[in-house]
Amino acid sequence: MRWFAQAGLGFLLIILLGVHLIANHWIGPQGLLSHADVVRYYAVPGVALMEILFLIVVTAHCLLGLHAILLDLNLPSTVKIAFTWLLVVLGITIVIYGIQLTWRVAVMEPI
Image 1: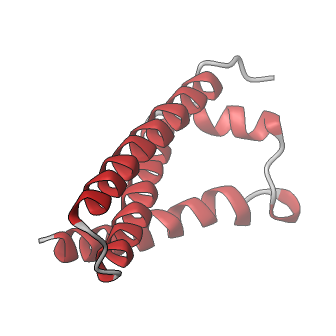
Image 2: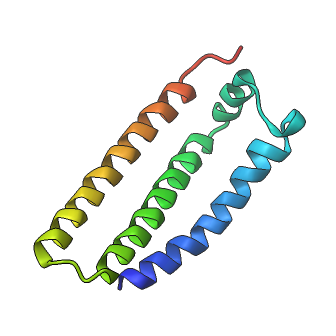
């Protein structure tokens, strides 16, 4: 079951990464958007939500892959459980922090 989630997230990651690269790195001058450009970009309806989805997909895909590697090490069950909970807490922390940062940029006034 986790393998299918990992594969599905990987497929979604390719799509979201493509959109992210085009919007953030190919449109901007010299491949980078200025702070003002990013604030204007996040003012477009749906952009902040797409970036949050990208963050969630990247985080989940990464942590599921790391979890699979840890399971392959045949560690004792107590260590596996501890690592699993550590990865869950880490993932939740990353997503909450990323959403907070995205929200702060999304509500800024364009310059």
